[in-house]
Amino acid sequence: MKRLLFTIYLLLYFRFAQYDVSGYWLSLVAGHFVEPWPWTMALVATGVLLLVLCLTEKLLAHWHKPVIVAYAIVAWLATAGVGMAFTTVWHQLLLAAGGLVLAWLLMITDKHLRHRSRITPQTFGVNFQFFAVQMLLLCLYVGVGNGVTDLQHYELRTAQALQSKHPKRAYKVGNKSYATSHRLFAMRCYLMATTQKKGLGDEVFSQMVPAGGTASLLLLPTDNYQQLLLPASKLERLLGSRRHANEGALAYLHRCAWLSAFMGDGKHTAAADYYLCALLLERKLDLFAKEIVYYYPTEVAQSKLPRYFAQAVILYQRTRTQPKVFYTDSNIEANYRDYTDMADSIPNRTVRTNMLRYSYGETYWWWYSYGGSHK
Image (cartoon, rainbow, N blue to C red; front, side, top):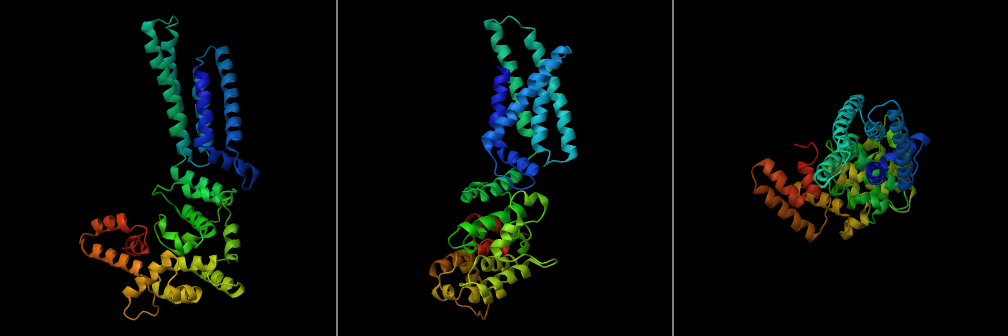
């Protein structure tokens, strides 16, 4: 019974909790991204560990050692193997120490169970409690000790969804979490730019923005880890040009936007949206107001800009004495007045930041004044 339950737990663990990590290991072996096969990899991993469990039990029995230790060994293999690429040496050493403690606790409980060879109604409940403790210890050790953080899972699953046939599944990954990183933010921006009808300008600030707030946040990292997730070359193809050596992020995006507008039929391309969003992240409102007229001339005239571009233009108009761009949208203007009225009514900055975030956290106005590391 113990072997069956532990095998089922491992199968579900690899299939639903660690399928993204298994996919990463498959890509690591192949040297390039490989779409994960959740059930296949879970069955293979569980089958290998079950074989190790059986062989280890036989060896321990032959050496007259406690057979229960085999479960601790398999639990350590399952946990250390999953987190090896994502954790430090110190974590692995602590994990090994925890495995020794787990083996000791399993031997104590197993000794009690073996001493009660004859099960009676009086002893059944006690034996079941010790058995449940053993299973709980094994499951906790495997589930908690692997060391792969939620943020790393979000990065892996977002990248795998983006490279699948259904990239929009990435919107469900960590959509209720505040955890973010440069890597995750850049991949989500790529998702929005390639799947949203109105492009990046309609969605970019609906997600958590990492601290810093610079144009570089929009670009995918170029390390080996990223190459196995979502290669930076995919974004370069979307933008239409590769980044030059020592070229700044904002300069690169500006060049891509200009080339895309010069060579394409329309000016508001994905490259233009990236450049305009970079200006917003850099809080360069004056330059943004100049460029939005170039890349979105018709939409400015007809008041049909994407959401965050429209919010930025309204902010520019309300904070400049002689604005050079005029944009009219009664709904956005009314929301901006409500936003400023609420801000003026709360003198304490910390309270004001939190209250405004609750009501206006997904607006450019809130991010411009309080987001990132801006003071």
